[in-house]
Amino acid sequence: MALVGKIAVVTGAAEGLGRGISEILLQNGAKVALLDMNETEGKRSKEAFDKQYGPDKTLFLNCNVESEQQFKAAFEKTVQTFGRPDIMCNNAGILNEADWDKAVSVNLMGVVRGSYLALEHMSKLTGGQGGVIINMASIAGLEPVMCTPVYTATKHGVVGFTRAMAAASDVSGYGVRFNVLCPAFVKTKISMHARETSGQFAHLVKEASIYFQKFGMLEVSEVAERFLQLATDETKNGEALVIQSKGSDYVAFPTL
Image 1: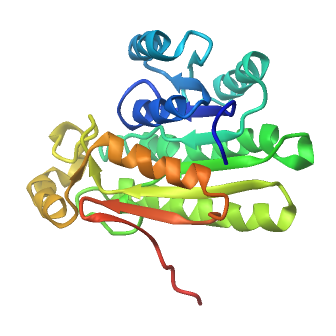
Image 2: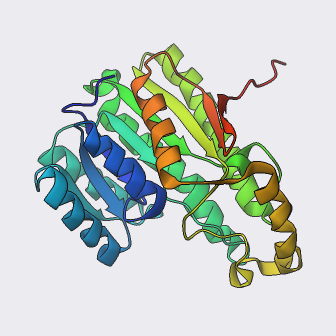
């Protein structure tokens, strides 16, 4: 898939991975709807993108992925402004073992909600042109992380949901590919070392260092490059791409 002229929607786009993914899409000629509930950072990112790529290339929309109403409104505004989306990136996520029900709501339900709403506009069965939906999981979606069991569960859920949706799309003729990114630890504001969000597992925070040693730390740009790989390679559907400091590779899941 060539990205020139394509329309993308990215959640959690104000900073971190979302901003990095938005930027690589813009660099390759796409238009991007930037969805985030952080209006200050969102507008700041749009201003920066406007200077480099032009004001008609991005649209910032204040959106909480927990809100069906806000999510629907964001898609409607995107379609009105740019047209139907070709690319969806469900990136918004949090790490909060203390407020674990919110973590499930954002990390898993937000991905399901975003995928279903995107599918309404992208599916060839409903007048769309098809495209690709890429969900953001984590190395924790493949490897149990003892100090963040709820985060681990949500990311495992994202991996399973994505793979199931890829199969459903293939059989149903939606014309939409589904893939999932599973990066190791990235240099963003999300941290396993924050005791205030560790809840009952605060005593295991020090143990998080073993995971950093095992998987390493990634730059945002490294993950954005792998996102581009999944977005443009039309042979990829139902793939989980794991990214570590030592390289990236597609996961070979067991066949039962």
